[in-house]
Image (cartoon, rainbow, N blue to C red; front, side, top):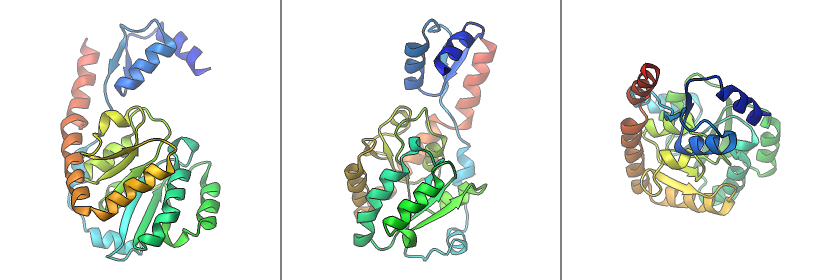
Length: 243
């Protein structure tokens, strides 16, 4: 249905914006006949909003998180696409080895009750908070030590760019868009989608070499500032409208 709607609509528009190179290639392949109309303008974020200073310990105290806890954030809608279930499976074996590990799930969606049941079944309740939909994501990311996005597919996830802007080391799946934003082993780890074992191994590397992880977070912040900030985002849209 969407494919046919896009095919119909593409005849009447002057320009089509794709949020990543992979999205452009997929759109042209699936829709066809619009190669001259498509332009890639990657999603952008206000990097300064995520870099400004905050009282990290105060945020963690409000959440009831002890100072020695290693906190991993996940900001994503609770739906199959985002792959939360695979992260839960990986976490279940890790918390026995790393009892200081704690996850913050920010978001809501159709799988909320299913994820709550899985959390209880895997005995992860003491290691995971479901925070719902929040308007203080910059502060929550600032209270985290790392970020995970185990998506099965993407366009170019804004939540990932926000975590990069916050200077967090990232574990994400090697899917469209994410591969354009991330550089494996430089800004974090890219793992295969649906792979519990690869997620688990990347988490072990993150937890056992935190000096390297912090360096990756710094590299992620530099990369998002250079390529995915609001200035290039706005400039490319203005150039498109003028053209």
